[in-house]
Amino acid sequence: MVFVLDKNKKPLYPCHPAKARKLLKQGRAVIHKKYPFTIRLRDTVSDEEDEQEYRLKIDYGSKTTGLAILQRNKVIWLAELHHKINIKDNLDARRGFRRRRRNANLRYRKPRFNNRRRKEGWLPPSLRSRVDNIRNWVNKLKQLIPLTHISYENVKFDIQLMRNPEISGVEYQQGQLQGYEVREYLLEKYDRKCVYCGKKNIPLEIEHIIPKSRGGTNRIDNLTISCHDCNQKKGNLTAEEFGYPNIQKQAKQTLKDAAAVNSTRWAVYNVLLQSELDVECGTGARTKMQRINLGLPKEHYYDAICVGESTPEKLYFKTNEVLEIKAIGRGSHCRTKTDAYGFPRLYMPRQKYFFGFMTGDMIKAIVTKGKKQGVYYGTVACRSTGSFNIKTSNGIMQGISYKYCKVVQRLDGYNYHIKKVV
Ligand SMILES: [Zn+2]
Image (cartoon, rainbow, N blue to C red; front, side, top):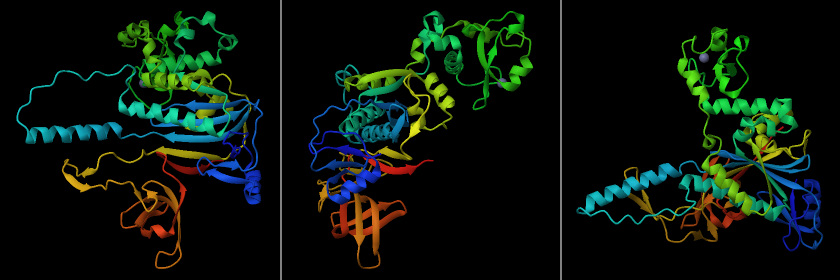
């Protein structure tokens, strides 16, 4: 589906690509944005309110966040947002370089007064960046499609509901959701490994510490996780008899509430509340259950579809594309590039624009003559000489003159790539 804006850039109902092509061909619309593909009508001004429900679903992850837009049971847009991952390493390296310079060039200096107070709501830069990425995309999408709802997974499992099964709804009593919640809880509590042999990354089973045959209950403090082999070997023994008395003790302790929620998820949730859309929350366990029920593979964008209670039981895919979005930033403030030891290697120019282009812009270059004849499409690295490098999907093309280049999309802090799915 293609996003559509009216003459005044008000978001309208998204249309089929064929209709968008027709409108563009007739000259009734212009391309507003290449990624995500959006057209703007030249003649229409819409004043009616769209009554439809458009739901943005977010599956937050530390490296990759899945995004999906659903209109009732139609999936109209999918994306994968890759966060920056090297922020902490870069800051640590910079701190090391500065420390060296101070020690090398200065006499002893008394420590300064401790005046570095962190503001309330401070998050480490690497987490801040992810939260900002999501805030950014919610705002971007609000401008392209009339979003009304958001679904977001803010906890891994529902600790409240697990403790008091009485307050739960029908679904809990049916047991399937509870099974998933219990499993996620146990995986978190026992660090996703077999409690007996400590093996990781293998299928784990829910295991009764005091076996059912000897009066053990299904209560959460009688359950743990183990691999199939250990489960079989343990058989009719209690954990203590099997040689693990500490497991029985550990099971009695309840997991702290904090384990289900982490600070970033919470910060993202607060950002979503600021968007003034209707925010629905779900648990990770529910997402997993719904994804398996719908028979979807484990991908971030499919997980996003399955977040929250509102997920329909049958889906209609109106798209077979996933937009891969990579957070790359807008270049560095620092004008000196250093080598691996923190010594100056080269100096960057003061200005960012050269011949109307900036490093990171997506461009199309049609080279009409010479050895490099051809069409190149990718991100540009600008040089003050006017001889640019273009990073295409087949590698870097060096020495393309700015005269052949045309901007497709300006750098907005993200890199885009379209992936087809079946
Ligand atoms: Zn085991």
